[in-house]
Image (cartoon, rainbow, N blue to C red; front, top):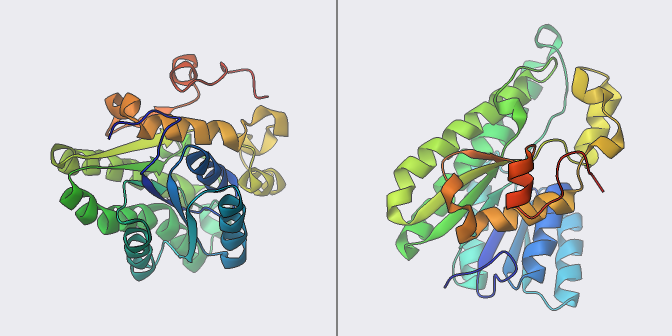
Length: 263
């Protein structure tokens, strides 16, 4: 079945990090477009509340506690998606953390590793768990939420920059290995987004991103719209790469206002 960014009827979508921010916005957008949605996150109460909200609006929604740094959790979530909805058509690898922000010489190795596990291993675990089912179906889309941090070095963000660079490499490898089997893998680099993550960044006072004003960040709902567009056939030209929302061309393609307008 083909689908447009506003028609996902019959599709089953799993979203990690779905309790807030981009993940929650994407869940609402997919549900409004007719998809069945599995919300996966560590915050059980938050994702179940969101699932109840979506069900009240007529959507088919489920929630599951999932720590993406634990492969068994991710594998179990994929299996629940298949059991609940009969398949898994789209996986949004959205879960990510930027805390604790610290310069390398001051960083805590355990905390650094834990953040890297979420930002990098979480993407691999999602790919590894969902790919076999998608290959068996002969179709599927995996969208990895990336960042400009994948391409540059930012003070205090060695864990985040390294993790997002690894995620970009996984997007490239995934597209190369799975594309000929009917499974698309694509990344989305949204720029700075008005979520709780930006509050933590602002509080840190470290590197230029912390100096941005709240109005400089785009709404999570815009990113959700871009995710839906990117997971539709219209986004296939960008498979194996990070699609950026920081350019006028990218914003226009996703149906968003041009850079410089955040509201």
